[in-house]
Image (cartoon, rainbow, N blue to C red; front, side, top):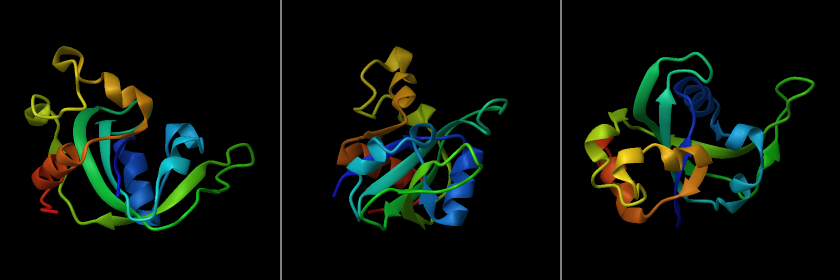
Length: 139
């Protein structure tokens, strides 16, 4: 099993969890292809919505991958994002700031937001477990 972090605005996380899917990196398939059935994903939202949302800086959801391959969805005639099916895990949003010093995937604690620019990326199991615990899940 692998552990992932997906940086997505809260409104998009909520839509995905309600629909049982996730997207990443503005609908590209590249990183989604790396996910395997059973992998766990933590979602981090820097903002409430993509372009004009308020600052949030929270882990907003947890989910388990439930399929084997990415698939394309049709949202508009010009936008066909790639998705993966997920099962949302019951959790409570949690602020990131109290965890920054403990999260090993954040190498530069002064510029802690840098890793999230990559969208979907792998994180160590220990970091995932720490995030899950503060969100109310003991794996």
